[in-house]
Length: 112
Image 1 (spheres, rainbow, N blue to C red):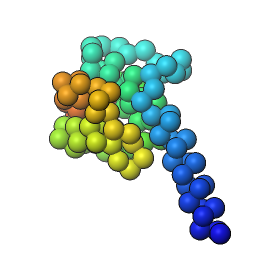
Image 2: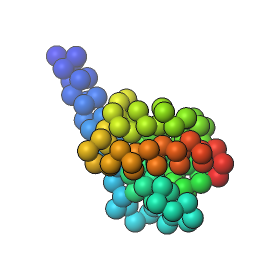
Image 3: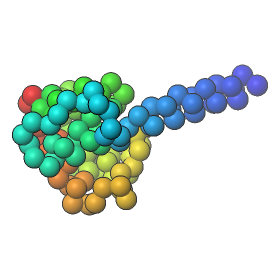
Image 4: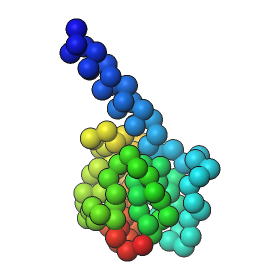
């Protein structure tokens, strides 16, 4: 019985984290400054969960991009397929948007 309760609790917590990712309607998200479309893609789709100073994002759910400094291939795979509590953005973003976002993160993480 305790195992069932633990699984249910973990499912609820994971659902709460995932539900917060990918939204761009948070009025507390700072406006994008410079960086064009890729920065807006990050703010709108990633900024609620991930921190990245160059984008003015200070999410606390997912990894801090400034500390992680992932390469474009890793970002592309993670954004496309999701995993580890992060939702997949395949079908929500076009492959071109995912590539643009991946390059933006790889080029700007740790530089804000």
